[in-house]
Length: 111
Image: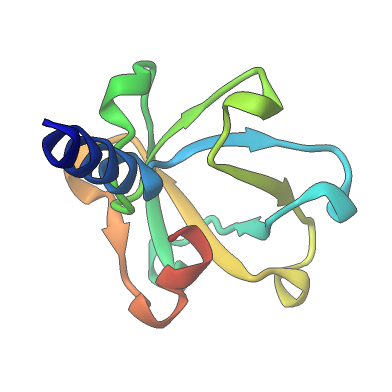
């Protein structure tokens, strides 16, 4: 029974480890990832869909839920005004089906 419980807890942890519940900070020094928002989908490393439901934001697939609490977030992000300052360039889409990585070499920022 202990082995089963341990395995269950481990699998649960990994299922939520890649969750994209994000918190936007005002301070670059607090951020895990510096993000630039592009007006052009073709410039993006990641196409992001903002969801209103925390349960939709699972895995590293570009579906983000913005939380009001830093302690709830899996990643703390800072929005920069300068493209050259960014770790990841994103584009916000109105369609969930558009969400996903275009430059998979930067995927590790949100793992």
